[in-house]
Length: 432
Image (cartoon, helix red, strand yellow):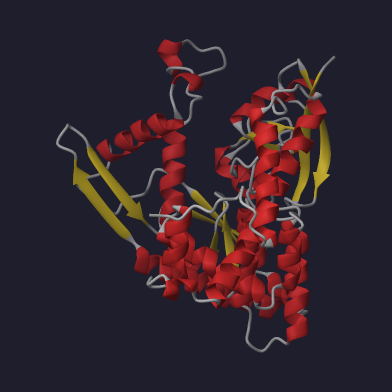
């Protein structure tokens, strides 16, 4: 049974006294009416952000205590197999999560000074810190301590602006902070991706169980590419937009809010399984996944390629799948198709959509993380107002933001978006 420390005793340890005060304050905020008091609309974001910052700072304290407990071998004193098992017991967390926390605590104590300081200040989350620790562990052994500090500092700076998923992608090229040779950075990134892909193939699993109630449940683990193909196929089948704007329920199906995404995706998965080709299983898949890679990297088989669903592949994996149906390579500097159509055509073509995938990875709306594969192409200069169906006038918007940009109740503004690496981003505000 997990021991419970009496935080209301006269315990003298600073951590115990401090946590007692934290709990007293939380009692005041939660049990009182502090959270129920209305704020100005613009203040909610700041208050929620400060709550998140406080959570990160508490997590930093917890990791320091875990590192100290690991050094003190408290798990051995308790007769347990390791600090991970000890932490899982006392925090009611899964063993895998507990082991990862112990590793992160040790990494922060062992050289990741800038990361630990940023976590202490609440400037980044434990998830960000874990990404940085993992990237630091996989840096070339030839780097000096000073070079490692430079790489770490660059990742901490990026972590203040990026979520952990995006930071993980950036971290694969963290070597660029100290390595001027782009080919060396490409080779390092490619090696990391190859290692990840090999590990993914080893982890590939599929289990299924008959529930004896007319249903079958299962669990699978597959490599990134296979997952991207499946995700994109399911997303296309599950898309709530199946008719023109204003179409009846009979024509377009129920409105999105009436069905959960889990149910909608499940129904799409059933539809996919019922239409699998049983006579020949080597035919083209339903979804086209766009793979973007510089021609010189493809020829050298070194460097990373980007999927239009947001993931990365090694150059070797890209070459392997480039000839398969359903995998469309978009090789930069290679042969091109006509991408500017002027006023001759109202709708953007598939070739233009593929080309735009080399510039955008997500919906162009500021802060939207819907992947490019979910988006629809929008004319920056409206066709109805004389705009052209040219690539420079195309931006990807998810279904929600595409409807929003045509909603007369909202105004929008185009701005550069350096973080996303795209030409432009759009923000919205309600018209007064």
